[in-house]
Length: 192
Image 1 (cartoon, helix red, strand yellow):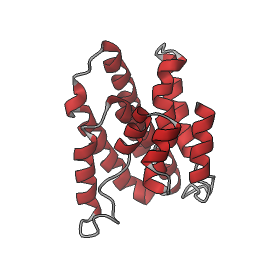
Image 2 (cartoon, rainbow, N blue to C red; image 1 turned 90 degrees about the vertical axis):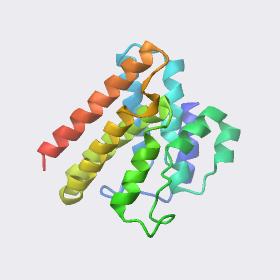
Image 3 (cartoon, rainbow, N blue to C red; image 1 turned 180 degrees about the horizontal axis):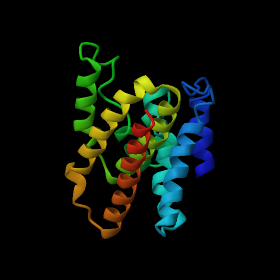
Image 4 (cartoon, rainbow, N blue to C red; image 1 turned 30 degrees about the horizontal axis):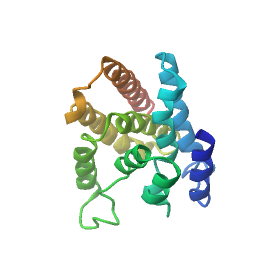
């Protein structure tokens, strides 16, 4: 299923490249999926469980940044994957809300993301980690604002309504990725 997700995402991201490096865009969603897989393996989870996270991670920017559709994701994968990808798609964008400044849009997005599913939050942590490393390396001026926005976002995610996990393993996973993301944000801040 992973290879199908990579093929699907590669097709839709084919005209895109990473802002600072010029690499094909697909390297980012794959890096996000790899970070999740590595962490979950370290925590002792099996490949079937890990796939619940890695497939939507590979697809996480398709709805937001391409012409790929929710319906296509549902048809090729399954409804849970499409729902997680939809949760990870920014709602409060500049195109949709041109009258709001960046700060207002990010605050509204943070309020929205604090209530997404457990799986979406784990993917979002890894998305932030991959992005902040690249931004800090290539655009220190923007990194100052980005890090502050993401510190606020991960803290809001931590205290969102889904914080009462149904299983102890979910709490363990959440804490692992939250702590890792927080550490990377702090390390990047020190590099500025």
